[in-house]
Amino acid sequence: MKLRDLPTPSLVADAAALEHNLAAMAKALPGARLRPHVKATKCTALARRQAAVGHRAFCCATLREMEGMAAAGLGEDLLLANEVVDARRLGALDARVTVAVDSEETVAVAAAAGVAEVLVDVNVGLPRCGCAPEQAGRIADLARRRGLSVRGVMGYEGHAVGIPERDKRKEACEVAMARLVAAHALVGGEVISAGGTGTFDLNETATEIQAGSYSLMDTAYAKLGLPFRPACFVWSTVISASPGFAVADCGLKALGMDHGNPSIDGAQVWFCSDEHITFKSERALRVGARVRVWPAHIDPTVAYHERLHLVDGEDVLESWPVDLRGW
Image 1 (cartoon, one colour):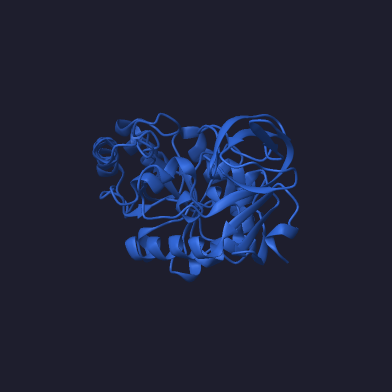
Image 2 (image 1 turned 90 degrees about the vertical axis):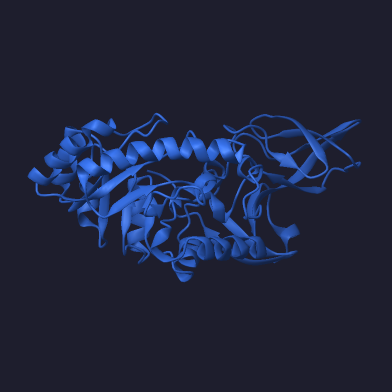
């Protein structure tokens, strides 16, 4: 099959760029130094590629991701890096399961589900989930009293990962990690789990980095000068052409938009609506022309699509199910 034969909009990954990204991360953070976050790709075929370069422990954001990874034989070490209040589905998984906890209630949920191991989730400044650093020891004690093994702590410096200036990004990361180190002193354990694609080479505190977007990338992260190449685009068709602008069949229902408009090479994107992207192109485009729409945020973009097509130039090499969608 050729690229031109794919229906549009289709989610497409360039094979060479993807392999470059996987190799670059494996060199920078080999083996257990990286715990790839599958929320970014929701695809077990891609996770197998990550495992093949030595990254065999994974982060998940949903119960569905945990179940899918275990069913695919990728359950060597799975972390549900998110609080849940119904963890019953985790007890039956054929996998090593660790769950994030930040309260007496989430500790009780994990214990009732038969989960053996937890990380204490700490609010390091995002703010999102996580207990206050000074409360981490108390949460760890509660977990141990319920028979849970506390592997350590986690905290996500999500407020820092996208700061454009590298020095300011590093400073914000260091402030966040000081909070996590203080919590770890109260909790103990061998694991300090943190980080993301934007701080993968700046976070010198975490024992493992939870980066995920690096494999496919997006235009938001591309602005940071990271050593990863844009690998994923939405293949789209021009369906209307007017003097001065064109419209393609790729809109809000095919793109994650929370980081702003997507990009089209040689064009200025004006706006997106449900099924349309309206843009001004440097070249005249006829109806039926194909364009590559580069998403600003890869994680929600992938979740809109059922398949990820891997291409080499004009050749479609493989089509991978985005099989970890859902909850």
